Length: 233
Length: 259
Image (tube, rainbow over all chains, first blue to last red; front, side, top):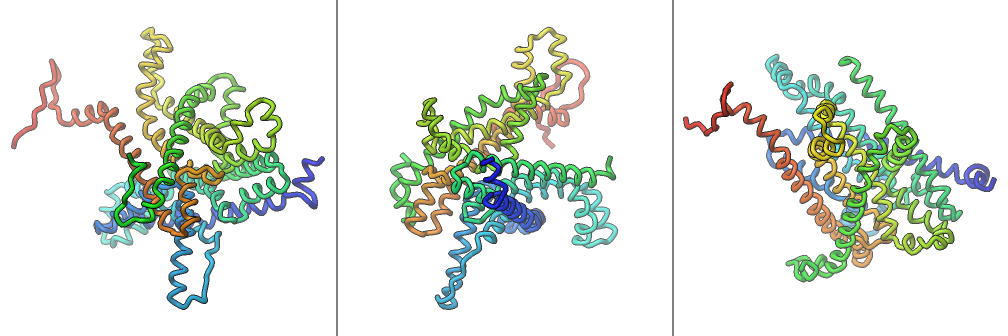
């Protein structure tokens, strides 16, 4: 069948699509520690006594939640390039460093994910009963000990559903990086569609792969939630 | 008018390119308003179909919603835009090619289908937030099913839906930037054009500020609207604390006590 030859076989595009899917998952997974970690950091800073710091973190969140993710990507990509050009000019103009689109993409997605997830972390932190913190402090634990040993272990369970939502958004947002010529699933499908002039084969195929990835992650997510709630059932 | 806003003091970049950005902003507005309204109209029937007892209908809508929520909007947009190109002869035959030829209408179609899926889920969540006992009570009182929907379910469900619907509008404003990728000169597209002419990175920051102004305005207005329409909930909560307990007769007027 001509249809299957396009996908499997020596001239098939299946391999490229599979590699693209791997890149998509790799981008999303690489973003998670930076994005969610950054979000947690933001959430902690939002509770700091320093008003300036709090305002700065709130402004960061508002900014990156309020603008299109595509624009965040461009701002990070072109902004990073402009900044690097300035730095390399300081050291003599012979050096020209190109920002890798993959790295810029991961940074941009991390920034966006941090902005989104900080709200989830904030509400998780505030849902830890105050009495526990007072009790810990009165037992002589320092503030950081209290946070690490009392608050933090409880956060993941509460934050998990919210973080799961952000992971779903993140997974779909990786497709934006295809506009910076990174060969992710979206780009692979786009190139295949353009080359073979068969967009109605390859684009639904890509959609199907995205759907499979997101369904799998929904299953993993509900497993994680069940696991973290097992003490509360 | 804003389009003739000719002088931004000290911002020549914005000053020079404002007409382009302004016309881009108008396109963004058109797309967001049109797709959100049509999506809103489609969402309720979709939601009813999803909750109907008809297995086929319910599963079909479930498939549609899963597909549009589980795949990137960019992929859906490509599918409409480039997919239509592949079946051009067919579309020409049935007279739809003039519609699909324009990136504008392709964006509109993709965004509408996408937001209808999301909004139908919002409705479903809001409708299921209304306690079942109320519907049963209304039916026991002899209200027609239209009256139940109109007077019992809708007022409460819409209140729950205000915030997620507002987030969806904000989401579509942000998503509409994708239309720049399929060559539509919306705000994002206009900004990209300006950047390719000037290579001045700052234009992206100005663009971000415009988007930010839009989304923040909507977010804040909706907070006010929500607070206003849910004030009966807050009033009872605070009045219960403030009002002195009185078993009989009319509640005493609560006057602020002077120490």
